[in-house]
Image 1 (spheres, rainbow, N blue to C red):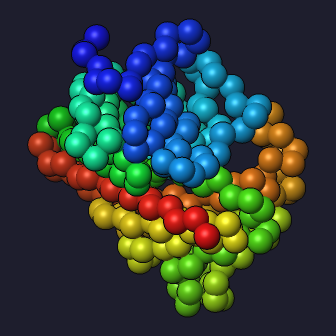
Image 2 (cartoon, rainbow, N blue to C red):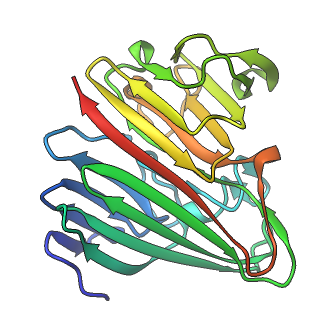
Length: 282
């Protein structure tokens, strides 16, 4: 195990996870799926939401925080949203920063034997945790042939009430509605307010958005991302790891590259997907 800086410790009860208690923020990061389940900037409440019924088992994804969908998005015979979100990741480095934050780097590699994605690749996930949240997911093709892959930072942003929450930055853009049979060509009004169920995929979306729940704003900036997914199940769908009323407490705004926006990597080539979130309280 690598040396950990002050304010960072490893807990091994249950699924191994890192606890961060630094001057600039506190956080919790599971090595299982490299899932960040809590991020609290100094003087604020948690930016992320995790279900009270979340399952913490080696073969299950954690419902909430920032699950990593990789190397595919959506359902396939080999599983939902890829295998990286239920794989054990290795902690490569942990570095304290001069602003009171910390940088954590995790790594995961695939040997090409998974039937859903028979390609060799390496993933490196860098989390810069301070008074803002910065995530960078790098994927490298370590095989001998090109491949296409999908990826998403499936971020569950905590909100007071999703029915009163506004998402700005997607006005006038076309999207495909995945919750009603895949209809498309519709455009978002100004601004987007999530109803009881929403599942929209925006292709070629802008790099900046803002979540406003009436108590705070979360400004989201992205790089290396062509797709944005906005999701909340409302009351239309039930999940065993999500309580019946919990849907109102989060809005998923996902930084992604999926479907027609999938990334092609030649052997030895890399691609990095980045997301930054900065919160401001009223």
